[in-house]
Image 1 (tube, rainbow, N blue to C red):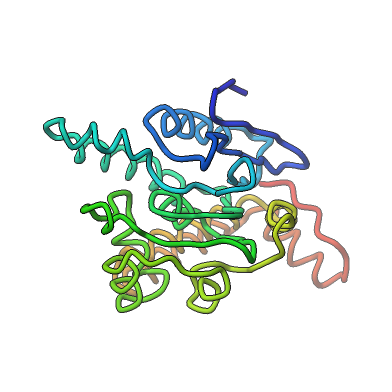
Image 2: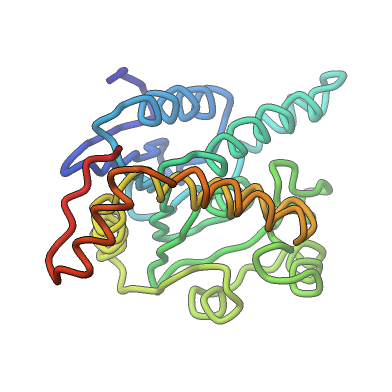
Length: 262
């Protein structure tokens, strides 16, 4: 694995834990984003990694948004904001379209680009002390790394408009109640819970896991009729695989399946 200044990775039992470590609140700047992109590429290419957990270092934040001085600098550069938006979109879309499950383990502040990263992950585990939001409007800008698009897909248009236009933060329980996070756990238990979920998924065959993720993510971007065609193709792609036969036989024989990823 590569060595980075702001990113730490650890692999155990097929689950990679990627920690963004940029004190005091793990804010995103160009260097952090570049390192995160490189680390994600390595983990996705590593056959020993079956699932990824992304979390923030320290006790203050998952990621508390972008580095404000850098945003100020970009405002003074022609095309600076567009360039930053395109870079963020490329990274977060890569995570969203990954065929390995990616889980955000959120503890503390999850704001701006941090929430945009979390929404690009496939699932989100959140501590009960966390605060989430898209406060960019308070800076005279808007979410630029997918927040205007992914937030409404997660929680509905009306609530997304409210959060983006007010810049308000919400508590973990509200985030759970509106479907923004999958589960709320006590502070200190977030990474353990996320890793447990990742290990459970990693125990399945990679083939249907990847097929399901492709169908879900691609299908969300098209009308349901096209989504059903995508599902049909992914479903049919598992025809004749050894793991499909093993899974069916294991069920009929009342035993644990022994998947071989083929």
